[in-house]
Length: 129
Ligand SMILES: Nc1ncnc2c1ncn2[C@@H]1O[C@H](COP(=O)(O)OP(=O)(O)OP(=O)(O)O)[C@@H](O)[C@H]1O
Ligand SMILES: [Mg+2]
Image 1 (tube, rainbow, N blue to C red):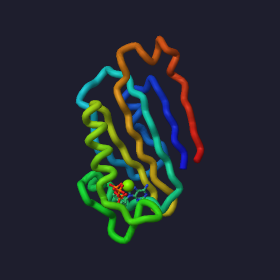
Image 2: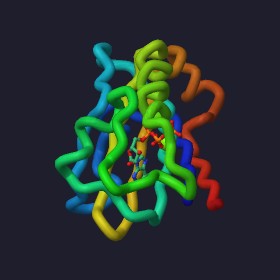
Image 3: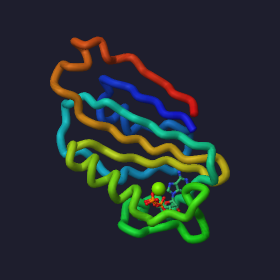
């Protein structure tokens, strides 16, 4: 799994494709424009999720049939909670996935005006786990 954090992005850049030609769905879109965002991407090399299931991932208790997101079977609440938290921050949430290759979730959160530029936070940090 890889987690990357990138500051100073436009909403378009934050929601741009990370995997070429991957099915991609915006699960939450910010209602503000002209802001910059800090984007957190979580990428795995797991089973992936078929295109038709992507729009329903943030429904409470929704689990893709015959598929688990990890070792244990989950409650189906994780991504619903993520969406609520990101919505409170007026951010965005996006998923891209290719069956047999893996999944990338991107969360982008609005930055305080000018904060990224002045604090020199435009750089990108990548953590491999
Ligand atoms: N990274 C992933 N790779 C493949 N499938 C996933 C991934 N994340 C979620 N899913 C699918 O989406 C469903 C919903 O995910 P969600 O995180 O909301 O719930 P959960 O993982 O089942 O349970 P919880 O997160 O509450 O423990 C999962 O049950 C799984 O089928
Ligand atoms: Mg989960």
